[in-house]
View 1 (cartoon, rainbow, N blue to C red):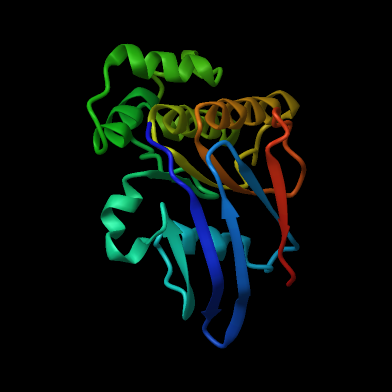
View 2 (view 1 turned 90 degrees about the horizontal axis):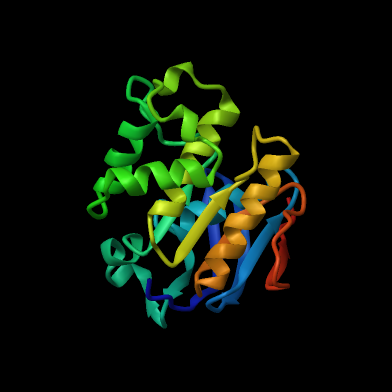
Amino acid sequence: MAASSLEVENLHVWRGERHVLRGVGFALAPGECLALRGANGAGKTSLLRTLAGLMYPEEGAVRWGGSDVRRDLRSFQASLAYLGHEPPLKADLTAQENLRYWIGTRRRVSEGEVRAGLARTGAESLGARLVRTLSAGQRRRVALAALTLCAVPLWLLDEPATNLDAEGQHLVGALISEQLARGGLTVAAVHHDLPVGGGAVRTLELAA
């Protein structure tokens, strides 16, 4: 997994008539995590979607390894994993089938890797179950398993501990810690502090 630096310069983003992000900027190096904080409507999700190339800023730039991501957006998006509020799981496929499909669009993945990913997030017993039969917390664990299998340097996470209990929140913190230890980077919108080890977490407070 080749990591690179993430730089955000003077981002301005509007949603309709609303100026959501006003001059946001930061730099993130390999092994660092940025926690996005702020009230509902402060623009955390808009910032994550802009970083992922799913929204375009009216002003400013996002740079990956020093290059504007819009010069080769497809290559940049191949280097990241974005996990939004609702896990992108297909209800009528099993958890294992979802992981094979999700990860298979990026790289070849073995059955052993899929089982190991589910085991890492405490979802090993859910592999053969249809996603529509899973609780919100169980679906979140399946999505986190996919995150571990993506093998990409940049994670963009929107409230990754949603619908998880205290044990699940510690799991999210441990997964982010492992990502940072590999030299990866993480930007996560959070309402509460996550137990991420290593002291590499910084906070960006967004004003509503």
